[in-house]
Length: 219
Image (cartoon, rainbow, N blue to C red):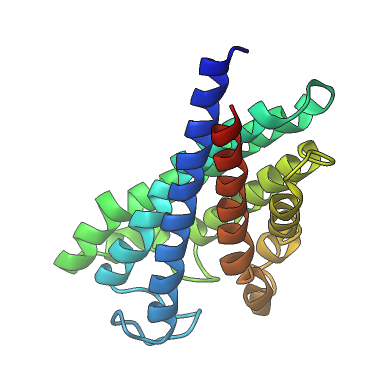
């Protein structure tokens, strides 16, 4: 890989990490507002969102998905040849995550919200996004479980690589949230542990942005 190619990879990694941090932090702020009842819902994690809440929460979440794929691809470029299998696994897991949550959020924004605004939801009950008690909520949890697998794979791939220790720990922490996401549909209180994603994921994105920034400076 020549200098120009590697520099392009690091820039892609840097900007995708910045976008991941920005979209995740925006979502976190809006989710806190939702839980406090500031977006029109009854408040708390078990309350269904209003159309406004759905739009505000799911738009940055939908944009996060392609940003995360690019970030994991860039991380793969960092990983030494001897551990590239983890980078490839991370790419595969991130693609599954993006496909699952992309379906959920696009359906909500393009199909469900217009009908909510018109008061026509009787015939689409299966598609309503109700926390802990809906088909699409289960799909969403599965999607974020694959995000955790992608983060865990990235952490394993970066093991021992210089200047990546902070990023690895945040990625590992994001990966270890997997059971609290996957089984949340059965044990709803697990959401309070899974909510640590609000720290681990932006932390990983910011730490990776710093890793790629150093690569850009020194390439």
